[in-house]
Length: 386
Ligand SMILES: Cc1cc2nc3c(=O)[nH]c(=O)nc-3n(C[C@H](O)[C@H](O)[C@H](O)COP(=O)(O)OP(=O)(O)OC[C@H]3O[C@@H](n4cnc5c(N)ncnc54)[C@H](O)[C@@H]3O)c2cc1C
Image 1 (cartoon, rainbow, N blue to C red):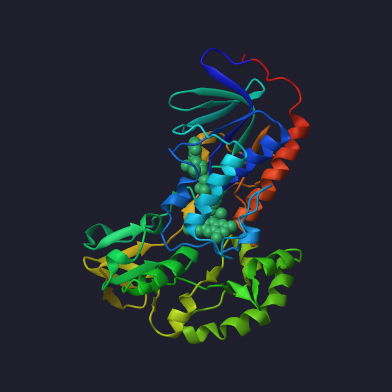
Image 2 (tube, rainbow, N blue to C red; image 1 turned 30 degrees about the vertical axis):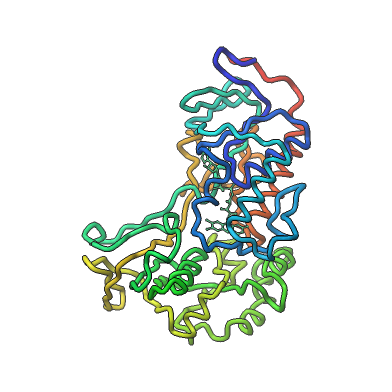
């Protein structure tokens, strides 16, 4: 039973991105009572903020959420706006009505239930599913001299399009999926991009022998990572040739092993490699420091840039919310498990598995698994607050 001013339910789902929506749809199908909380004013806000050029790197047929595939009228790699359209239709189809503007500030286990606080309300639930996103907080590294840099400095999460950089020299920091695509976008918008590649890399083509790369990844993920990499290595060499000729250093282990052991996501190429081949994208080593007009690099070279885009990734933010994170998060604040019961009773995380098989696909699979577990365990009434 809820105490005064407290709303009681079976499950609170936090986050209305793809993962939270997928959990909501599965709960709806299972007939379990739930409330979906979203801190922002719209659903899937992260997809509304992403850069305009963004298309899914994973193909449509492997990127849909449970019970409702993406429309066949979409292209194989849907555009960002189509993803938003799909997620809105998805929410409607399962009557998902997130409570917007409800940021969960604190979640604590008390007297056999989860108690949650937002600025305006309190909730009590028998189970809690956190779908707050692996990409919650932009990572912004710091270099000496950065404060004195007079150009435009922004994180990839703030980059919308290359239009404003036409005719400018722009440095993209980071050779991940965002960095690689933003470099292409800058070039296509008439800017002169350079890209910082700090270490070794793994590259994947978006398609291999006519099949989406995810199709390959799903099949290969059934093998141990090292074996999967051994099988795919000749095909990847065939796709890209010798990476050293492009100035890149191949990672010592293949993409599956790097992902499994170091959580390093390979770059799915959407045109970056071609720009490197045509020398329309300049490679730079790690930054040593910033100058007022540009950057100096580890090899001693220096160049001026009117803008620097930090495509340096994101990290989850769960520690503050949960307070005690023993057995739930690692020392870096990353979840130890996703899609199954954590070490805390009736606490589930969804969407935190950085997988070779696509995060959207995995979020859907996790949502189904979580709701199967909840269907079995949620049988007694909500215990009253002590
Ligand atoms: C640029 C980019 C491109 C990507 N492309 C692909 C792709 O092609 N294919 C693929 O499979 N994956 C892709 N991903 C990875 C992943 O699928 C997406 O990040 C996806 O949006 C993750 O969904 P999510 O619901 O887990 O997280 P999010 O979409 O980040 O949603 C989390 C939600 O939780 C809300 N929230 C957070 N904290 C709180 C709180 N305390 N209280 C209330 N609400 C809260 C947030 O506002 C947000 O709405 C991409 C990621 C990025 C960054």
